[in-house]
Image (cartoon, rainbow, N blue to C red; front, side, top):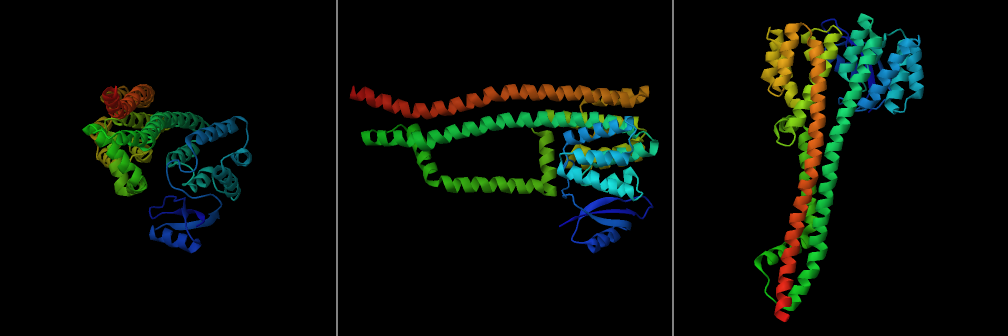
Length: 399
């Protein structure tokens, strides 16, 4: 189905711009009417449609786009001219189409924020809110310059996390491959040799040979069952209930708890600092950063926390009640509030926890390699000993 963009006004009189996937204009109109949005314009976009914080444009690409846009202001080029130029030079297909279409939308008299606000499937909500703030305050140049640094840090954090997962994953696959090779190819050869000799096998050896024979006969069935289990688990965590369970698991699991919590802390501190520097009130800032935690379990707690702030509860106390932020972060928030420099303290704390995530990932990577090698050595050693000991006994009898 094609992607449709729309501008409108909601029941409270506020602008309601966005995008959705639909069969035609009538379906979009029906959807907007059900949400009590009075549509002004509806038109089809050539961009792909995929929801998610960074579904179609990655943080590194957003960082480059923000940096290039900030340069436009110093070159005395209009935003319209800039969108046309950046659209011609962009490598990301969807971002290229978006910038070209934004040029056409702005050419029809819409503001830059309105044009960008239609592409909710391309730009993160945080970025769209910052663009609106920058346009209203006349500080778009500073906003884009700051956002380029923000998304650069996001890109680096994601790259580090992917590297931390990729290395042990490759080692694990290699370890499983070596064990399967031994069980399915090497053990059957020794099994036939020892059987031909007619000697009784030790219980451990017989057990390992039995397991080897079983795997050899039913490997495809076992493979199908394992694949089904994996796909079933992936499907479950793609559901709303499954996402909440999995995100809660990441926050509390022994292996992921430290990195996950500090990564979220760094992201929350960095985004909140930027919003406060831009003049956004704490209540609105909490609403804006809620999707940025990228954790469905935490999002529910952030919604509750926002309501508590609305009722007059202290920010540091709210963060403490959420239950995942380190004590150091809470103390820095308290100090920042008392000193009247909350944005600076949040900025410093984001750097502190970025460094902690770096150190944790490095330690984890250093620890995992020897652990996996020890596990592989033990398993291979047990298999080889179970084969070699009977061979030695038989050779000693023959000798």
